[in-house]
Amino acid sequence: METRASYVAVGSFVLILMVGLVVFAVWLGGAGLRENADRYLIYFSGNVTGLQEGSQVRYRGIPVGTVQDVAIDPANVERVRVRIAVRPTTPIVKGTVASLEIQGLTGGAFVLLSGGVQGAPKLEKAEGEEYPSIPSRTSGLQAIVDTVPQLLDRLSDISREVQKIFSEDNRKNITGILANLNTLTAALADRSAQLATTIDRIDTLTQNVDGLVTEARSDLARITSGATGFLSTTDGQVNAAVTDARAMIASLRQSADDVARLLKQSGPGVESFSTDGLYEITQLITQLRQLTDNLNRTLSRLDRSPAQFLFGGSSGGVPPQGSSR
Image (cartoon, rainbow, N blue to C red; front, side, top):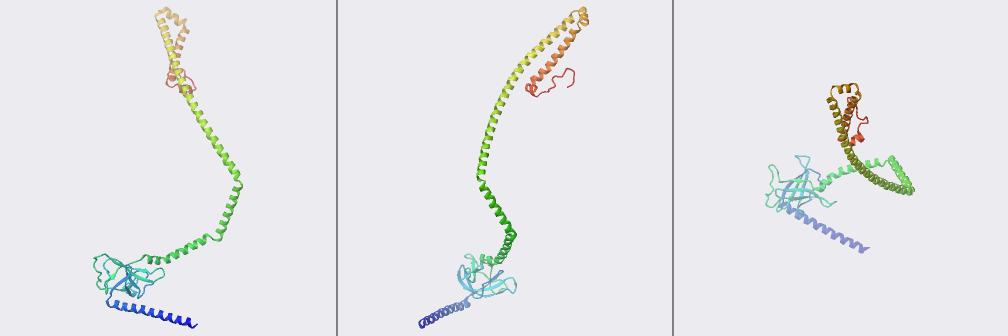
């Protein structure tokens, strides 16, 4: 028991001594810094939670000073004025900017100085200012911290909407839908053999239909070829018939003209005979001429379009001469 107590006493003494040395070193460094430091003002428009007097000031990650004062700007209550003290050798020039950073996820805040190029002029104080002012910018981590409350509000809204979706009525409906799905899948499983048979029949029917279509196409091709040959043969035969008929019509017309010329040259006696006694011959000649005219018109139509005359023409025949169709 006494040995344990002595260990505790020794350990406590060593710990207190180390803390005292650290505090002394910080005080000594701060005293030297306060005497020879350059001071600057930084204005932050956002939240500076975690930043306080004594917080570190770093230039590109290197400790170069401390925060001396954090207060609301008297000239503008919407921003925070921070006064820092840094080593005189710190290269704070035009283009240098300050941002508020966090040491890890749970550490304190510190001021980070960055920017500026080699050879840039040293930052000077503006007229009416006690110290030069370093422009500030919002750090990425600070932006995330500032948006956390909005994110939490949004998550709360989403949670409420999810609760509405999974309300009692909706849970009952979802349960019913799942039960119906189970019933449907069970019924499909029971009829899987019938479904397979039906699919096979549909496959067979499709193959039969394909065969019928192929045969129909073949038959249609044969019919088309036969019709083309028939029309070609018919066209040749019709042309031959038209030629023969025209020859016959020319012969009849020549015969009629010869008879008429013979009657005219036979004298008054023959003319009287033909007028009184041969009336039927005159009628015959007239009818022969009408017949030749009708045959001539029919052959003209047949010669223009044999197929239309044979298959698609008028069913009324050739109208008599002098009558309307």
